[in-house]
Image (cartoon, rainbow, N blue to C red; front, side):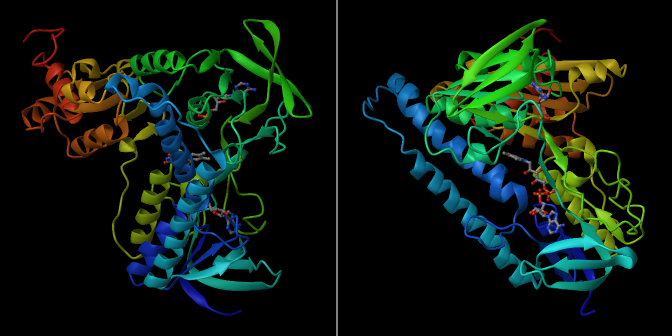
Length: 478
Ligand code: FAD
Ligand code: AMP
């Protein structure tokens, strides 16, 4: 038995590393256990998000968008770029460098804040002890007043398409292609499937997305999901709804996929196949059989609204617990738990966790959809504003989509902001800030927005809730 810590965090993803830094800032003696080895064979902090998730996918989305714009978007501005080529290994190398900088940055923050890094596999034993098996096999046990489990998630595997990381890859493998596949299949039209499909489609791959459900983006507002489906299909993504993959055979450098669509058995052959059917928590081997922490049959650790588990002093956050599998949700839970351990009364507002899909245009929302509110019996007023009439969007030649504001018909309080369009993620964040302060559509409408900005579309959509939009014809006149 060696050190005793106030807080030991298992996992250094956006949940765990943020919790560790905040705990250390609050004067708690803190350690964080991490086992993940990066490309250089050394422990790399930052979890899924920094190493193989949010950041590398956005790096490739940004690179591929620039290429796509040079090919398709420049002409309208009178710019002729006839010899634009893509060097995929350079693009992947740039992505790797960003990952290296950011994961190294977390290590620097640990040092600066006095967080002790314990390299190796962490396991929660009974009595808030944590066994750490180092990468060299050495085992040490550390004691903690409080333990935060932040072990994250990994891609779900499905038997019909076993991942070999060569021809059939998961999201991690899809960030490593060294050339553009001619025919690319994607199983799953969720966030990850659409983002990774977009990267390779922009670089010239013929992309087919097979999705078992009949309805596209079920969590999004229906008006948004319909528009997004139209826009993405027009871009060339062949999104087949109601297409359930039932089997696959790899033959050398290609894979033939069997699927059922409208009751018919079908086959299609690809050069690469990305399996993006969701993620599941990483909790096997995390908990000793007598740890006392309970999880459900899928491995999600049971927690209350403050992320406390069934064992006093043991908390769990991020992708390994209920709720949206998003980095910012994990981080805010980390802050909440660290602050509660330090005796503060921190809370998290789960109703206002924004969701974003980083396609182009982006798709983002916060709060409730019009359909969910109506199903709950809430009477709503809705205002929308299309980017097609936004001066800023026209100037940028980026006019697809709209902003939609949903407000309570009785109180005018904004209950949801839904955007498909340029910079949707940033616009929705403005909605989230406004909603956190309980704003009404009228309040938003009374604010001064800079001209010309994309944000004016949010302003106009808020005005449209009460029939006062200036730059669009109002559905209702008031
Ligand atoms: P993770 O980030 O999964 O971190 C958990 C860490 O714990 C890992 O480093 C793991 O090695 C470590 N660990 C696990 N068990 C142990 C153990 N026993 N001992 C030691 N260490 C252990 N979210 C967004 O919000 N925005 C996005 O744009 C976005 N894009 C994504 C794109 C892709 C391709 C993917 C795959 C995910 C994306 N996500 C995005 C989701 C996001 O990455 C996760 O929600 C987030 O990383 C969850 O954070 P976490 O800290 O809970 O877990
Ligand atoms: P998400 O959970 O948002 O990452 O999305 C994953 C998607 O994959 C879901 O919409 C599932 O319906 C879809 N999916 C899961 N299994 C299959 C399958 N066998 N064939 C096609 N789509 C699938």
